[in-house]
Length: 124
Image (cartoon, rainbow, N blue to C red; front, side, top):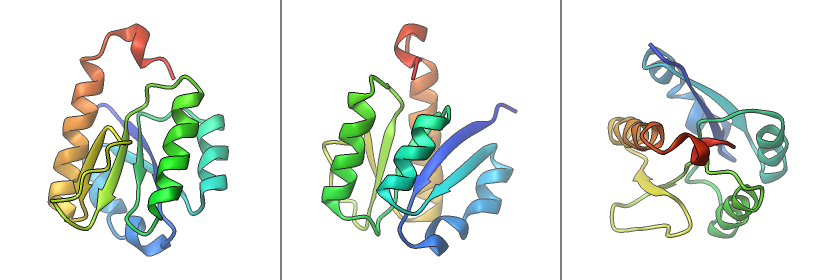
């Protein structure tokens, strides 16, 4: 099974950590960042397959971090978690709800779409 490395940015440490064991069993390794600054440091130092923006982040922080990721030239998918299905964060590649099953399914779909992307566009 291929391993997918996710940068999970969440201001509330319990939100992402609560799903860690399930994600590991599905082949995901989640590196946690608890601030935008921490996320930027991790992103610049690592090689991530996906960035997950938690629902406790402000909209402004999510937009700022996504903008910084794109400004770096990275095509790493950015997924934003929203509390409602009706919400769409247009700055992100996908907006998913915080329901654990739907979140995992959505992350799988975004990850699969990235692997179908031409190799030149996948370079972070």
